[in-house]
Structure formats: C-alpha cells, structure tokens
Length: 149
Image (cartoon, rainbow, N blue to C red; front, side, top):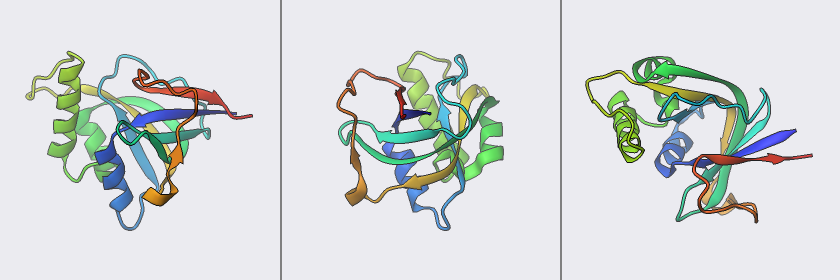
C-alpha cells in the first residue's frame, strides 16, 4: 500500500477543521489541470503536511479519485469542502497561486483546476500533529509518495 504526503495550505486546513459537523469529503485542489494525479489508488491514504513554517503532518484522508473541473463547477460540486467559505475566496487563492507559477490569471475566465477528492478527512488538533518524515526535503512542491508496507 502506498501513501502520499501532500503539501497543504494552512488556511485550507484550518477552515476545513473548523466546519461543524465535520465534512466527509474534501477537494484537495491543484491550481492547474495540466498533470493528472497518479500517486495513489482509490482507498490509499493522503496525509496533509502543513507547509513551512509549521512542517508537520496535521491530518489525513483516503484518496477517492482525480478529475479536472472549471473552478466554478468545483465550487458548485464541493462548495465549502474546497477549503474556503465562499467561491470568491477559493478563486482568489487559486489566482494568487497561479500567478506565482506564471499560469493564466485572467479573473474573467473560468479556468480549470485539478480536483483530488479525499474521503473521510481527519484534521488533527495542534497537539496531535506529527513530525514530517526524516527524508522530507524542503524543495518538494506538491508532495511525496511512500511505501507503507
């Protein structure tokens, strides 16, 4: 069995952790739709690793599937499970990230994003955060797969 440790945005994490009742699935989105997510098979765990300066594993869930959707449809399908309270918040985060990677940022366009559906997400309390793997490198952008056997 494989697992994937994914770099995770702190705002996405804290918003989803705060939802009551807890959500049973989340959209772990990618700002672009160019490359498919092939690191996991359905049912394998995805670990949420908070980016620097925290650098901890703060939760996990189980990979369900990957798809690409226009950002408006991702909001229509997943709503707040996209990790923000409003469509404008999600779109703003995406546009900010896309600009850093020199991707299309025309605010008038309905651009496509990658959608990694994660079931049964668990968000740890701060006191339960776990140290990152010893071989984790600071230059890992999206994440890293691990053999869990």
